[in-house]
Length: 209
Image: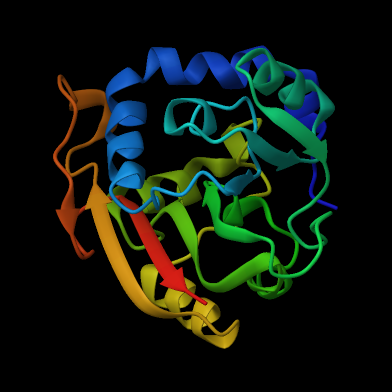
């Protein structure tokens, strides 16, 4: 079970971050949009306050934090209490599973990816949005994570690590997008989205079952 205490105690503070860092958030959202399937038959793991699910039109989410889930529900999302390592769904039900900044809080990322594979239909997609551990932002977060209520116990992964773990969970045909090429405090507009990785701090990887 991930440490959800900060999310239970400070849900409004977490949610306010997206308003205070609007260009970072909207840049990340644009990158995720490029790899989300058109199908509406999907859900977000670690839906949090619904900041990604709601604008993406995703109506279903899973999260272990009741307090975060309450905010997401106000955004029109049905939230089921649960964890990524044990999804509360039968096999082969969905066209896609989305996780944005969720893997860094997972207790067992291998089981997390295997569970996503289990609930996906054949040909379904797992979409992972995360801060690349090898990027400037990833290194900053790692160096300062003990100063953060929310990232104190986070584990950051490189793109190669995420792809290898997805391959081990039987995903293939990978697509990648990247954004956030400047330090977040310098952003004055939404950043562009590019294919690949190695330049941007925020990466989106899609793999197919």
